[in-house]
Length: 177
Image (cartoon, rainbow, N blue to C red; front, side, top):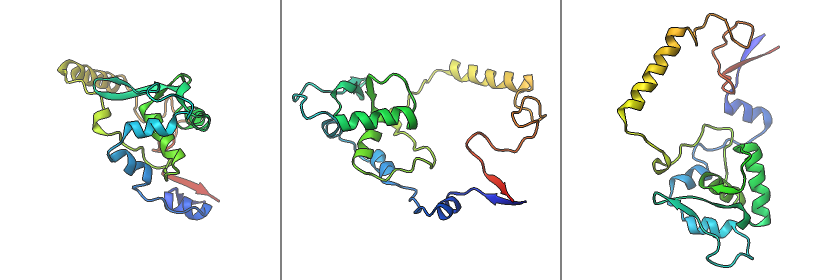
């Protein structure tokens, strides 16, 4: 057997797929200025009167809107997103993240779903500035280290005690005969 690296360029060449740019249209869209009213207007059903559909705003951030306002095409794409891309079972609200992905899909933006996760803009991150939570996290990390969890002694691994150095869905090297 010989080792075969599983890199995106090799997989794309083997499958006859084009190389996706690191900065695909969806990633660029997320980094740009987003017109939330345009996104909502594009996704909602034409039969919804003006002003009825609106974003729920919390802490001066557009947060979500009700699924019942979506057009039929948007509902179909939304269910696919909720079932495959970002699995959830609560589908009565369309979150900002899913709305932007839905908008990008319906606008035919290039989206690299197999690439690295696209970081959310800083305004989407929740930060807790308390020192206590940082100290608790450090203590939890120390507890894990002292209990032996995570040691590479072969116990508790799912592959018969062999550690291949790869995490789930992050395989860096495979073998073919």
